[in-house]
Length: 380
Image (cartoon, rainbow, N blue to C red; front, side, top):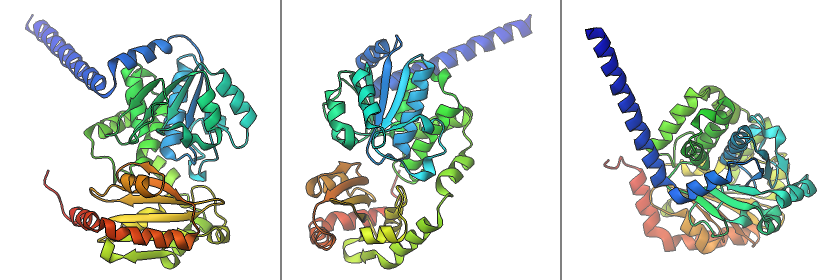
């Protein structure tokens, strides 16, 4: 009799704890996402529909991971789903589950245009403005389908019918996990979805070295591992696949194309089209290069200038409280995150670099403060 009562009591306690945990988590998601928006989107997804999932120009690990994961989830829900990206993605991501089904607009524009035209619902992942899809921005803007944004970048545009925009999160991939969970569909997260989401989180945080000081991020990662992610294998597939030419390009960047300005706590790297051709450049070959400049002791601000056909593309990175988002918005028609942003210059390389250096004294106080802040362990 005692054992029976004890077993019953433990069962009641476990149910109470589980329900309390579930209630806490649901409240957390309701705080993270607007409940009314969530309810409306959930209703939209109740019936099978033609859906397109899109992401930004020059897609990275988070763009690809979040898009592929969401596409598989929606497919498992019974929808007809296609992922469309503007241009090719890096070779080190070409192993990701589901990537062979992606429609690349640069190669299949007519197919993509038809899909966008017929889509009832269009998801916009990992970008905050329609212009960020570049090649098919006009087609996306004209599309009649309901537009749903899931993103973690600053200052999203008001071009979307529904928006799940959360700045204080590691990545769009983490938000996609929360989105699926908020729709009460966590049980649909299989190994394929989990791997893609993990790639997004891992790459957007530099293997958990920045933009990841959120307990929730690690809770999500734990759930992804439980769902079947081999973290060591994924890391190898992404980071241990350099071609010889890419490795030599990195060496060239550091030995011949890096300038350090210690008086401004700044370092930058520049690459001309001639440099890129010399090393048989492929998309993704400069991924992470700017972080090498930022890793120098005493440096709080780093930039990579890469010559393109009609412009110079700039990647900015920073430490501490120095906002490269503001810097990019103020001077280079760009933006992004506080510590990781991008922009463009339409001057020639020598002029671009000269103008960049001329801007630095205006930010001297903030740059030095960020350098000091990042050189010590700050109080918790």
